[in-house]
Length: 259
Image (tube, rainbow, N blue to C red; front, side, top):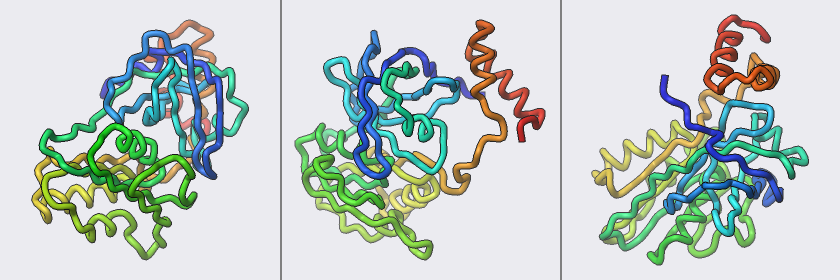
């Protein structure tokens, strides 16, 4: 089993909550003593909300003046979605050390960014991090979000079931001349198709692009058969470590209880 990130490496307190659009909520945290940004513009952290020990990953929209800003996409259901719909100001959350992967080649003369709403925070931060010409395409049912992303940006409606969405967009792109860098994130199956297109059809070097699956449409967002909250709370009250609580949760889930 892969080692889980230390999602409680830092503890932060929610000081502000702001709805930016129909499906995007901004959470601002302070009190993260010892936290340090990597400086990589698409860096992300694992977030653990109160009463849970499972984590979800979010791009660091910004880190300045000891305030960590996370812009969270809310869905119909989910651990963090449910929490962000509450008055969470004052809540204490766990945050892991940040990691990032964006690496602009020295010879790059342009940047092309593509993604859905989950990629928007990273797209905005990448755009702010470079003086190179940036072109962005963002797919979201929320439409343009005023003041969030400046410059050459095209806002796209989500595709119909008969359309391929971002994968079709990328396959039909007219690429800028010269060397550049392509960054993209979104639904995992589309990202796999786009990687194949970049590598096999266009012959792009792996150093010229970064394409990441942020979520899975094939798995869907299914309700949990076992609610981890009471297991988490009981484990914490008993002084158990996170690994011990995970073992308790896996044992209960494996036994088929709570279905």
